[in-house]
Image (tube, rainbow, N blue to C red; front, side, top):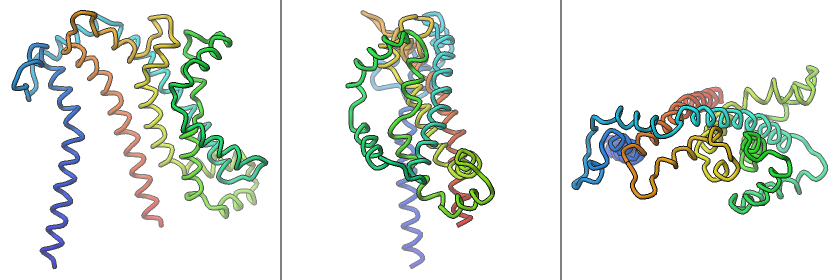
Length: 276
């Protein structure tokens, strides 16, 4: 019996290790290509180990595009967007989960319906709205339309329903808490795992967004990183080693954000499990 259990545990660990290897390999391969030359990338059999051209490729990126300026633009847009989404989606999700108001079910159904509409279909109407507001070419057009979204509200509503008991809110009201104070002082500390996941999800989406910034931004000085990186692709010839070096530098902040927020997410989940 003990031998069978050990065999099962061993098989589970092997499967998990294979899954980790498959997940990590694309980033490893990106790093290999970023440290190589374009001719080495085309070599067959392919090169499987790191090269020595990383700093040369990085220097070529900085000489070709305004990497640092677009990096700061993207960092600003992604950070502000994430903060606004966390605030408004958690507030709306808390309201949907714990308060009754006229039209609540209808509004929630409409919210779910919007999740089924492809985002590409809204580009033209959204652009016309931004044009009428005079926001074309500004960061406001990237931040404000997405400061609350259907997925974020749905996610926070579902998490709030299971994590926050009505008795806790009743105790807060007895202590004199108003509606917003209940949300800010009572609900938000409990919602930290959900906020950590939503923060990761929102930041990565905002960082990787390419189509909407390409459509709405007109000044090259305000281009986000993904739009600027697309300029590395030449019309007739492309230095793929340089492209991979730029992609690698653009990916590193996402890994840092994921590691920071995922630790918070996992530690809060574990703490909740221990308390239960």
